[in-house]
Image (cartoon, rainbow, N blue to C red):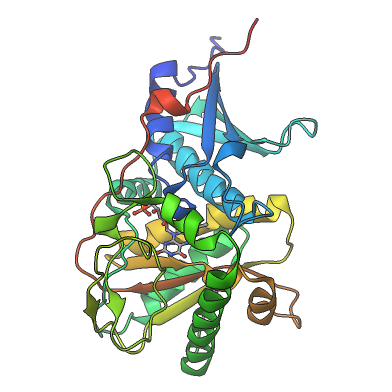
Length: 325
Ligand SMILES: Cc1cc2nc3c(=O)[nH]c(=O)nc-3n(C[C@H](O)[C@H](O)[C@H](O)COP(=O)(O)O)c2cc1C
């Protein structure tokens, strides 16, 4: 009997890494590096790409890495291989956050295919959304997507939404008072063509109604940011985990990307809003002491016009050389 298992080739895995780099990341910092070893892809945090002012603990860096890990898993599955995931495989190497191994060939199921199809169409949308309500079934799919990755997604009630939006505005004010905040934001706003950061065209307008707390990218620029009315009653979701350590942050990132792709698959536009989880006192109010849930991210979903594709670094820049034999 022939027991040889065909594993994904290096070329296939390079393609999957390329797909993984389309994941969302805080300020498009793309804080990841990858190493291919046989049928395994190791995912590393890049310490030089942590945002010390808004993310001193590296929580959002791990969320960004988690989003890349989920995308990598999905890309390998879509290529027709079983996936084995080990998170933090070597305790003496904390920057090695995951090892994703392409295993035996398997048939691609339609759900995997549908999510994978959404990958190139997912973009952060910072523009006004339509006032059309998001149907409960669509929200149910998002809640289920988070659950499948071991996280909890809560749909804010109208009263909860107003409170969360107020917290986000308050967090934005506090962040602006934090030393180095504006300079850090400015460093990651792309005024000139580059392969990372948030390009000025992606920044979007200010909300004339002041209902949606859009991030203050490009504030130091001389470009005037237009003002437009956003939807007055945004649909707001809170992504939480039951723990609040590095593995929980990585899990939150995988859940985030599964939720975002599930939204994209349903033609929903999405905006991560992380100001309220960047100020510890505000984050505490958003977390649920009764259930022990820790808020990791706030999301806005709705129906929007098509958003553009933000830049990414080429794969050659994120692939680490093979380990010395
Ligand atoms: C952890 C995390 C936090 C983010 N926070 C915000 C935010 O507060 N405001 C915002 O407009 N976008 C936020 N984003 C979206 C990123 O800016 C976006 O993913 C990145 O610029 C790449 O663009 P893309 O999502 O269109 O591919 C966040 C994304 C992640 C993963």
